Amino acid sequence: MDNKIRLIQETGFNFFNDFTNLDESSQGYGLTVDHSKDLDKASIAATGFTLSSYIIADKYNYLNRDEIIKRVLGTLKTLYYNVDHYEGFFAHFVNMKTGKRHKKSEYSTIDTALALNGIIAVSSYFDNEEINKYSDLIIKRVNWRHFFHKKNGKLTLYMAYNDIKNGDYVKDEAGFIHHWQMFAEQLMMYVIIAGDDRYKKEEALELYQSFERIYGKYGNQEYIYTPGNTLFVYQFPLAWLDLEKIVDSDNISWFDNARKAILSNYEWTKNENHQFKTLKDGLFGKTASDTPKGYSVFHALPNVNNKVLTDGSVGAHGIIGSLPFAPEIVLPAIDKMFEINGFWNEKYGFYDSVNLEGENVWISERFYGIDKGLETLMANAYLSKDVQNAYMKHPIIKNGMRNLLWKKK
Image 1 (tube, rainbow, N blue to C red):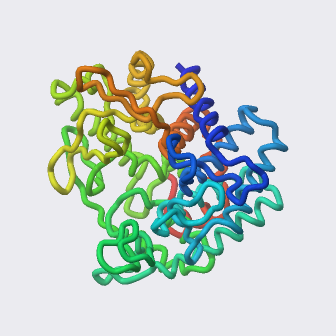
Image 2: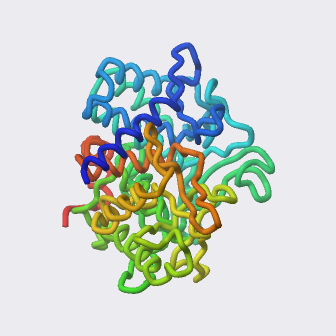
């Protein structure tokens, strides 16, 4: 079975290798597409996954070291000099060739954080003077305090900023957008802030304690759930943060919490698989993915609306992204995915998603950068933890965990 996981990891890198701008004369050098059907729009989060994948490429000899160092340094220079940002926060989507903001894209804390994860990981792993220099410049340029505000008397982070009226995610007037007042995919933000000496330990702790921890239960699993309870929010931060043996000051294990969310998702699927042909034979995973009607975010129980949302589509990344947490259910599901004719692409691995509900099998024609990134990093986390080991050794992460009072079990 490990051979299949290694194949998932290698084909994931193939995607980043082929869908990243490697034109050395381009201002967008190093940027990675949002998805394979639009080669002009780059995702800043996908670029963070690409940076992380170079660690895997070095460990598994997919590329020679000199080429990897050139790509990492070139990407960092692009991010520092060419990519549009606001107070250090990158635009969510940018032009693949120029790094300029894509249309009315917002400046996003979460997408910036995913990019920072890749930057932190490569800085730690390669420990190259120039890489460290540009990594530090980008990290220190991010002005987290500009996004601090009080919400219901608690120090909270805004999610994003958009200065364009009717811009992406803007409901009314331009400006700051929504708040990280709930548990979602933002865990790494608090660690990065807590590890940065520009911020007080007390501020970081207050930010971390300010988001709601709401417990819910489905079947045998009780855990802190996100409002929509979609799988990727548990998985994304833990693609870099290795918290398997870590608890916070309230004895919360975010690794165990993710495992319970995954098992809960799987348990609902087992109980209700008669409703959906796709969900039979061990396939599971209500997450965000491509579907026959476009990109959708699916919801599992429990959630704030107490209602399941799915059309039966299964994202490969929802399953593979669960691998380090629940291999006992994931490995058989991966076998089943390999049995679906046409789902596996020999060069880039699984297409984004599959749906068997209609008269004909529907398989996405797309590869999404962040979804392929989750597959690649979680395959590596299962095999050898190269990205996680590098990330966890970076001083900002070690200091951040200590200042947040996270400790070994």
